[in-house]
Length: 368
Image (cartoon, rainbow, N blue to C red; front, side, top):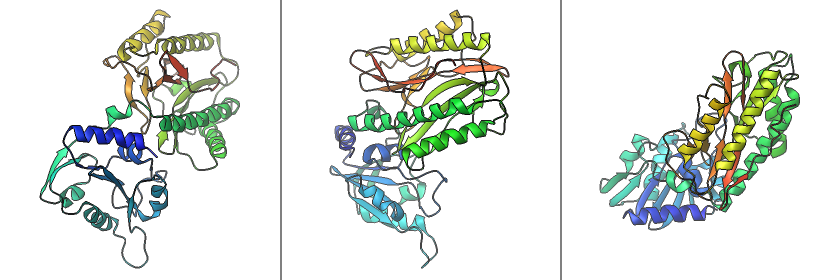
């Protein structure tokens, strides 16, 4: 599992003369090993710190909480676990993780690459005095841009779940229901389809407050409301994203015109995706399309990459001169907003292919 990812990281480290490295950011750990600890209830009270990946001499070792050992072992690389919950002594996850790290690292000397911003200070201090720490925060991010076949399979599974969520959202949006009722219907459908708990994020709001977006609230849907549903699932450590706009009853003429314009802008964005296309130029073309149609330009990005985090390169934003390349996965999401009144946003995920784009999300974005 994730052998190609580790090979990319190995080649990166070797080219820079780094024979030893300690990875601590959740994105790096998942990308290198496929392991993603459950996060739905916040930080684990028994964990002493983040899962760690130790690299030395071409070999990899995963260091995790003991309750995660079975899941870690499924990744196919050696895993070291440390004691978390116990009734035999006070809970001391930090001390246990520190001991596991020292035992794994040993008495190393020379240059050691570290993800300094993600590594707690007490763990940095635990590395032997003979180690020369070399910060390489963010070093793996460029390596993550082109997805492997294994990653694409995980992303496709996630996008299929958001499709399920959108299918559940459309009939749930009706006058008298609340935003949280719609969210509950979406989340229930997704978890039934997955057969397990699935973290769910992003916006589920009436269009009048979609400019600020956010979590669903105890807001009652009124007749004629537009309703923005922007969904991300996290399955096996990988994220999805997608957006549709639905209506409580028949949309008004104004809403229908906005919806058709946003759909045309999304179609334009997808048509611009091909190897060599510049991210910032795609952003400019799509924004200008919205302006030329007579609407205010949207306040957010035109799109972004996705993978072991919800937002990765390539970012489809004005400043970015990154060219697209086969294997990138990009979300595209133009929108039209009239704060306090109504809004529409539509979003699809696309895979950059050798000749253009393959649309990965299949949810119905049409008008009723």
